[in-house]
Amino acid sequence: MMPVLLAELLPLTEPPGVRHFLVVGAVLFVCGALCMATKRNAIGVLLGIELVLNGANLNFIAFGSPYLRNDAGTLGLDGQLMSLFVIVLAAAEAAVALAIALNFYNSFNTIDVDQADQLQG
Amino acid sequence: MEPIYWPSFLFLLFSALACAFAIAVVVSTNIVRMALYLVMSLAATAGLFFLAGADFVGAMQILIYVGGTLVLLVFGVMLTSQERFISMKTSQGELLTAGLVGASLFALLVWAAWSVPEWRGLSREEVAAIPVEPTATPIGMGLLGARVDSVNASGYLLIFEIVSVHLLVVLIGAAYLARAKRKRSVIVE
Image 1 (tube, chains in turn orange, purple):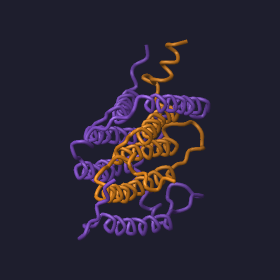
Image 2 (image 1 turned 90 degrees about the horizontal axis):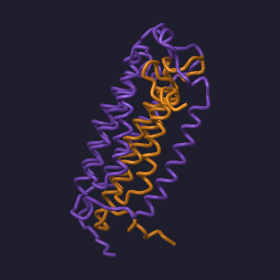
Image 3 (image 1 turned 135 degrees about the vertical axis):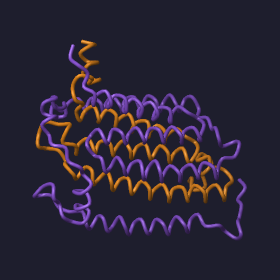
């Protein structure tokens, strides 16, 4: 049971499929979500967002690739175009979020998100 | 014993690098090291894009993400890196809760990925039969509204324009937000 499972999980003699890419995307997504949830540095939260977007990108690419699945249901080029838009929007999001973080640092002299509690009810 | 399929070996190599550095981003407490690990993880993901046949997106990943976004983030790290913010620890209880939630989410995602038989993958002969085409030209045509790769697909001209205007707005907004203020009011908590 165990060697078969390992051979399915690590495709060394067969071409990888969509699901292998999906597992890698899941690792990136979960790491990014944990990073967003646990980091206290605002820049660290931004790094986590980048990881999450990257995992989503990997899924788009995997679903759009013709080499990974054996039916006609692939996204085709749409997957690649979507992931290009995600990359561009991630760059824009990083610029604005970084400007906000710098503003926060300038006015409060800290980058710890736990101390940003002015809006707390 | 079947011979090793080398693209699979490269896939395992790049995915191991991407996952290991992504985990290192979560585990590390030093913000400068986190940024470095994120660069490594994103570069390894670009390798995965190349393996999936998305050569243009892989190149853009390296150019925009690794070259642009990360430089921006490293600037943010440098501008805010006082001694006490370089390394900030999270409490053990929060880490434990986050680990449990993350592990269950990961298990759910892997189960979902494994439950669809169409996502199993092709055999070597099927992969070898697929013609290799560069994707830059069809992507450029698609962004300009003409799809050359399939008959029924629609172009992306409107989205392209929206993204362009969005980038301009973001540029102005970020420059406005991060501008140097002549008189700064420091709020001491």
